Length: 159
Image (cartoon, rainbow, N blue to C red; front, top):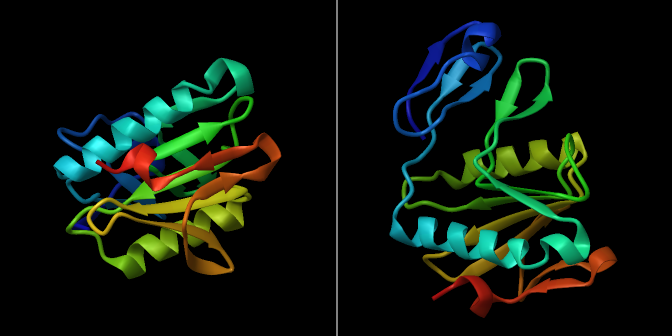
């Protein structure tokens, strides 16, 4: 994670940033980690997985979408999956990059849970591990959405 700088929320909402979009927390801009090849490839495979279910399950997968969790807090998950539509995603997925600090990522995952996202997942393409965030972070053999009968296996997203 990078540097922080101050900005009013209205200016943030009307600003395009060169390179990666930035998150916004209570007046501060928060830089995001630069993704590497494995991060980007995993993100693409996750999008393909959910797009294959789009019509059957009324899912919409959106990469890197600004989400307003509360006044003054805008986060950008790697993937937000909506069912059937916004504002609250059914699934939020963060994909670890080499420069990510786990404490910062965990805090972000907990904020999604507190906001009401039912399925909050962390994917680590470097160790080929998947985690579900419920009461803390738990490593899981697959990522599931029981109510939609979705079972995402590691071989679907890791090369």
